[in-house]
Structures are given as C-alpha cells and as structure tokens.
Amino acid sequence: MKHFFLTLCLTALSTIVMAQPCMNGYKYRRQVTVTNNNAGTLTHVPVQINLDTYTLIGTGKMQTNAADIRVVDGSNNVLTHWVEPNSIYTANTKVWVKIPSLATGATSLYLFYGNPADYDAANGDSVFTFFDDFNLGYVDNSNGKPTPPEAQKRWKTASLPWQWPVTTP
Image 1 (cartoon, rainbow, N blue to C red):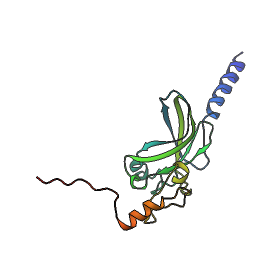
Image 2 (image 1 turned 120 degrees about the horizontal axis):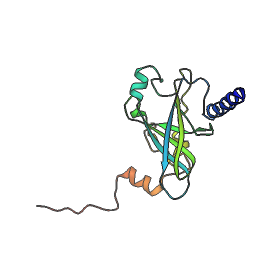
Image 3 (image 1 turned 90 degrees about the vertical axis):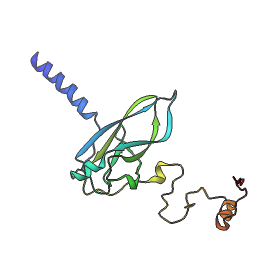
Image 4 (image 1 turned 180 degrees about the vertical axis):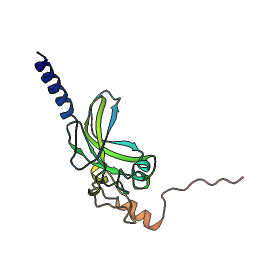
C-alpha cells in the first residue's frame, strides 16, 4: 500500500512539474500574470510587462542588451515581443508582448532570460499593428500602411491647413 501511495504522489508531482513551461539554454524563468478585466476574450493584443533589468543585468543574469528575453504562454508557445530600447538597464524596463488570445481573468505567461549565447528576437513589427522605431530618420511606410500623399506634401512644405487664432493682451 505504501508503494502504491508513493507512486501516486510521484506521478502527481511529475505531472505538476511537466506542466511548467521550460526553454533549453535559459537559466532563469519568471512567471508573469496578465489580467483581462473585459467581458470577453481579446485577440492579438499587445500587453506591457515591466521588468527590473537594471538588477538582472548588473548581477550578470541577463545580456546587457536584454537580447535573451523570451516570453512563452502556458502551452510553451513562444510569443512575439519587443523591448523599448531606452528602458533597458533600468528598474522599469518595458517589454511588450503580443498575446494571440487573452481570455477573461488571469493568464500566466513565463519570461525566460539568462542565455548568454542567444540572439535578439525582439520584433516590434510583429507586436504592434503599426510600428516605427524611427531609426531610419524618417517615417517608415514600408509596413503596408503608407502615409497619405497630402500629409507628406504638407510635411515637406510645412504648410498647415489651419492657423491658431492670435490674441493680443
């Protein structure tokens, strides 16, 4: 009877352990809870996760450019993400994650880091409907959403279709 009970306990424990997402090559994992307070399921929604990369980078647990961040859902599906560059190595790093389907209530995501050999997989174009990091020095309209020609014309000539009323004291 003791043998049966021990086998039952180990089976239950292994089921719990196996249910936890993992990624090879990563030393650290952090559970993050995202809550949807809406009445229905949200689809393809970007959510912001705040993370203290100042401490993680400072203690050598994360690459200095946060390139080893990965986010997975409870089924171990890797989710697309983007890290705001100016927030890296701060106590309030902003990691944006696109969640394909977010049901009402609490959902667990898992943030992995601590893989010194990994590459940067952050991709703002995959997270947001419209994304431009402004690294090119101009508005990038190659993402399928061009700037209207009239707006480009007005921008180049700096003419405005309206004028603020001028008042004098």
